[in-house]
Length: 80
Image (cartoon, rainbow, N blue to C red; front, side):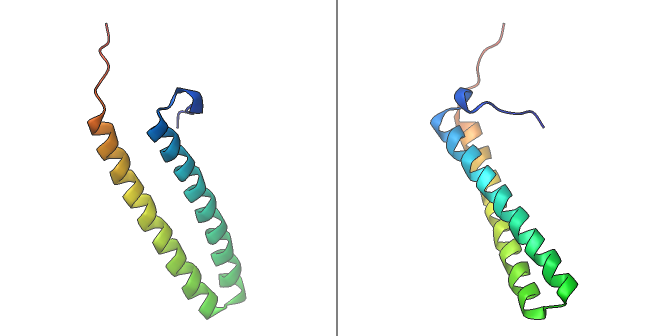
């Protein structure tokens, strides 16, 4: 994946990048908790972690749709 410089982004792009990084961090933390609880066989915690992961994945899906909608609205740059 190509790294994006935050300086080159529009205000909307900066918001999307910040949200993406936050979701990525939260997904990683929840995944680690889930793996630890599976090792401990803690059924209640597993169910809670699974629900949180599903919620975060839903937020990611929503973010993708919003990004695509914003990308369609922006005029394309002409290249020579």
